[in-house]
Amino acid sequence: MANITVSPTRMELTRLKGKLRTAQRGHKLLKDKRDELMKQFLETVREVRALRAEVEEELMTVHGAFTVASALMSSEAMEQALLYPKQSVELTMSFQNIMSVNVPVYDFQTQTRSDSDIYPYGFAATSGELDTAVDALGKVFKKLLKLAEIEKSAQLMAEEIEKTRRRVNALEYVMIPDTQEAIRYINMKLDENDRATTIRLMKVKDMILKEAIEEKREADERALKAFGKTEEPPAEV
Image (cartoon, rainbow, N blue to C red; front, side, top):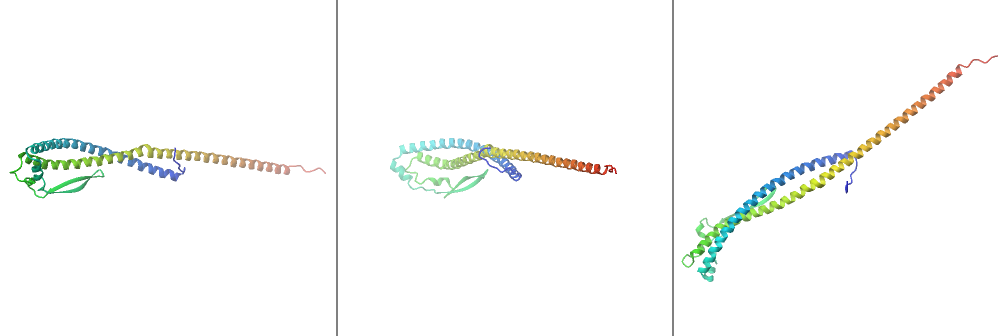
């Protein structure tokens, strides 16, 4: 039992048994938590992959539309059209607890509810491709925000899975085996003490028995001597 020093007493044995039961219960709970987190994490990763593919596809559409618009319009006209945004966005963040992991939940509210209020320019001096690009960018914004939310959730769950895995391994390969070894050590020492006590008691019993036999023998000898004296014949005159 390396690097562990325990007192081989029954009180320490009781304490270690309670510690072992607690460690085993904690090990089971942490394994269940790790398994459930892994399940949630894999589902989140699949969702991230699917959503990322959609976002990348839509962003390519936005990029293509902006490329065509920049080809049809001068850079000064493009900058002037997009210089002052018309729509403002208010972003709020809350948290959702998933297996003791607080993952973020993003929500945003626009200044106006109408989707047509996203164009900060007049339509006469701009290209139709710019309208398409701005509209597509406004639509992909929601998916971008959702993608950021679930990617952050996946990151937090991955960190929690790693922490839980280390705790499970520490319990499974260090704490529980060391505690079991300490319990075996104390049981062995207590058994040795019990055997030593039994041997001492047997020796004491043998000593007491020998003393009793010796005392009885001496008492018998004294009685025989006393009886012999009383049986001596009287001396002749």
